Each structure stands twice: as structure tokens, then as C-alpha cells.
Length: 446
Image 1: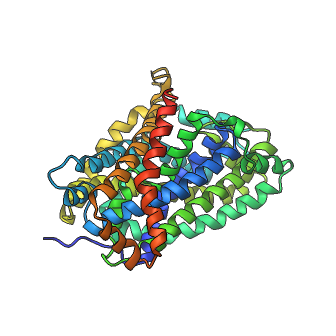
Image 2 (image 1 turned 90 degrees about the vertical axis):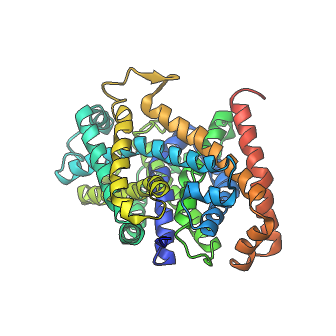
Image 3 (image 1 turned 180 degrees about the vertical axis):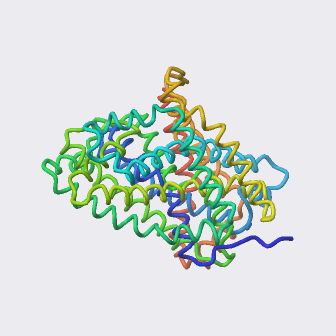
């Protein structure tokens, strides 16, 4: 039996898993979804869901992966053989596949902006950055080429494996993302009228909250932490069996929330200062970033640096999505990794082309009144991820003996018994109940 490759260090695992969690979820998606959902109340719900639902679920996925040392599908097969439970892993693989198909489109947008920034075609070249964004995403050839480049980079790194690919890449640039975010925040907060944006972002106004925005907040918490799709089952399977999983989980959730806070403080003060619309939608970040860096000395240079790091953060999420699919195919046989990564990358690219074209030649094609891109995003974030989270929260207490769970969380992580019982109750009762209630309310049962 071939030995499964492992992370070379705990910090390598934390940075890779945090990169998977942060990526587009915290930097790109959270600001625009918060803007469309009323601001502070939505952000507060996102924090609460991340801490009290996402964190316990993250630990549950860690336990599944580390205890089995297997990919997402095989892990469920080992714990519950000859049952239908392995379909939870297959659902996660499918969700990650679909997610990467439209996620790579956003990665392509970042590559286009990065290239434009290098040649000086962003800041100062267009008076209206909203128009620049619309022109960028409505160019079908450019969108497809950029999507292909993004997926090509993702395949290249994942094909190299865990230590030489994903871990090494994560260690190099993740810390620099924090530094440039701080530069952006300082300038954003010193703009005229910036405090209105801070108030919008941090002051809860629950008049804007309804069942759909609660579902969005729940989906965003799972999306930002990469839980519900068994990505963290796969990543934790590369940990040594006796690893402490509490510390990495705390670090990942903390980093995710800090980056989410930094993203909001960088974006919303600038939105209100520059008279932009917080409900701009998917293009919010691409409109605000050039507007803010235009106000900074050496702005074009800093914009390119930020886009490079934003691209990297996006890629770290893409690595995890492709890795769960590749790992489920190669089953620990790394001789097949390169060929499998290329083959799957090509298929994902083909599936993602309609999303790339949904702002150009396919803009009139809609699914339930949503563009192809938005429909894929809604399906993944608000249906498949919560569904996966629901099934995992049922699976863990039902199929893994309580004594095994106690060993993982008490003996190896040195938690108190009372904390374990709280975690167990949240996973077994609270998470399923919340997800079911939110779903039923959204479809109009209540």
C-alpha cells in the first residue's frame, strides 16, 4: 500500500487550509454579498455562523480526514462501509468541481486586471472603473483565455503534490496579503466620508434581514471556511494521526474572520467616500480597488502588488477544490497525479466556459432568472454547501463512536470534557436544526 503524502509542518497545513478558506470567499465575495444584504447585520450573522456552526463543522471534517488518512470518498467508505454515506464525499467532490468551474472565471478576471495593471491600463486610463470592469468581463475571448490560464496554474501546482506544490506556494505569499491589506485600509479610512462606510459595515441594522439573507449568511460562512464540501476532510487526511486539530482549526477560523474584517474595512469606507453603490454586486471589488489605489502615492505599483497577492489567495482556494477531486481519483497513488490533474482541469475548464460567457454572448440565457454564473454560484453556496454541511453534521455523531470523537478532541487536543459535550451537541443537534429551519423558511414553509 502506497504511503499517503503529508504536510511537512503544522504551519504549512494551517497556511494552505487558511488559503483555501480565505481566497475569494473572504476577499471578493463577502464584501459584495454584505453590500447587497444591508451591511452590518449580515456581517454579524456571518461571524456568528462562522464561530458557532462553521468552526464545529470544521473540526468534524478534520476528524473524518485525520482518522481515516483518506480522500473524501474513501474516508466515508472506511467509516461506514456498505452504506450510502460515501455519497456525502461524492457530493463534496461534485460541489468542488462545480465551484471551481465558475470560480476560475473570477480568477481569470483577476489575471486580466493584473496584466492591465502591469502595463498601466487600469489607474488613470478609465474615468469610470465600473465601465472598465464591464468591458473586461464582456469580452468573451479574453474571459475564456484568462480562465484557462488560471486553471493551468492551478493544475500545475496541484500536479506537484502537497509539499512541493500546495504547501510551498502557501508559505511564500500568504503573510504578504495581510500587509498590503493594512496599507489599503489605512488609505481607505482616511478618505473623506469614510466613517459612513465603517458604520454601514459594522453597525447592525436588522430591518434589512430576511430568510434569504440569513441563508446567504449561512452559505457564506460555509463558503468562506470551505466546509460542507469535504475539502477539509481531504486536507486533514495529510496530517499525522496524532496531530492536534484544535489549534489549526482556531487559526484557520481566526485568519478567515480577520481577513473578512480587513476586506470590509478596505472596501466600504471607500465605497461611501467615492459615492459608489454598496450593492454593486460581483464587480464591487474590481471597481473599488482602482478607485482607492488612485488616491495613494505609487498607487499603480501597489495595485499590481495587491492584485498579485489577491490572485495568489484565489489560487490557494482553487488548489483545494482541484485537490479534493484529484485525490478522490488517484487514491494515494501519486504516479497518477499529474495526468489526472491535467485531465480534470480540462474538463472543469469546459464546464466553466458558459459561466465565463454569461456576461457576453450568453448574457440573455438565464436559469431561474439568474445568469449562468450567478445560478452556479447560488447552487453551490446556498444549496449544495449547506446540504453537505447538514449531511456531515448527521454523519459524524451517527457513524463515529463518541469514544473515538472524545479521543480526538480530549486526549490529543487536551480540551475539557464540558467543551467536548458542547461541541458534540452543536454538531449533532444545533447545526442540522439551523440548516433545516433556514431552508424551510426560504422556501416559504413558515
